[in-house]
Length: 210
Length: 185
Image (spheres, rainbow over the protein chains, first blue to last red):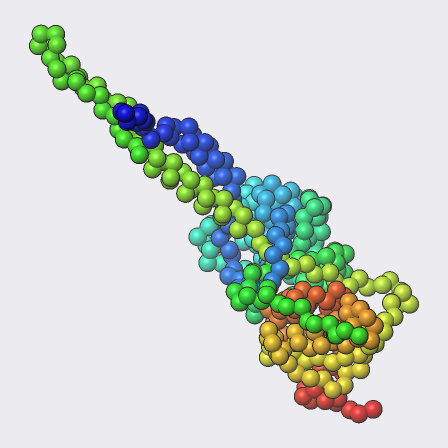
């Protein structure tokens, strides 16, 4: 009996369609993703087990020296926030250039009085400029104003505090009391990083039988 | 797998001396390109999700407008935890800041075991360990990292009711005296 010959088929597949799809996806991800902006101050986050992800937030960063910085992610929201603040403080005049400079700032830590001067700096000067932090004590609490106005801009923004591992608790407590007493917000998120040592495998304690 | 087909027979002279250009296939192997595209997709997918920060929620106690509105609680349910600047954890039960004991943050033999011990005790007496109330206080020179550690312990041990509170002068004095009550009254 003659052997049945199976016709040889080429194994090569047309990759064009696959390539199309993958590049479509690639373009989508590239356009939608946002890179983490460079940070104005280095902050070493504390470790915790929590894995809740935050999406829409305003961040109050507290650095090692206890200085507070405020940041809003979206540029449009920042512009509106600035307009609202300027309306509240008519004595502060900003040129359009200064306003644009503010819009480009992801994170800032200066008082309102310093603002026109700092915003007039060119990018090179700004990089070397050391920000003094937003005043947050009970006498002059600008942080509360920023947070309050930002909540007017977008009421769904959650408040997150980003503190350094070794920053003094006094500064954090100042921010917390500002939130609870001045802004009337009691729900606050603390930004943490997932701990390196596996603390998650905690066994429940045996409850005594009685 | 993938090959480039090159059309053959283009070099034969057919029409008396006329040279024809070689017919070369326009098909290109796209496999490496797809590989690259998917690699980039993976990269972008991972970076977008990873850039969202982790957070733990903290609910601060609301100050009642009138002091009479304050809720009274059973003293036995209380466990006070005080953090100081040397990363130590001081703790005591109940309302009176006497006999403060010092411990550390550790997976074993630290504050976590004390919380478990207290939970067990409440389970025995009240039949419910969730009745426990933990109060976290810090000295003014403590570090933020320790506060997060303490809140993390609450999460790990499953303490349902906990709050941050300001430290009292009595407690500060007790810590200064190595945990013993400053003045015996």
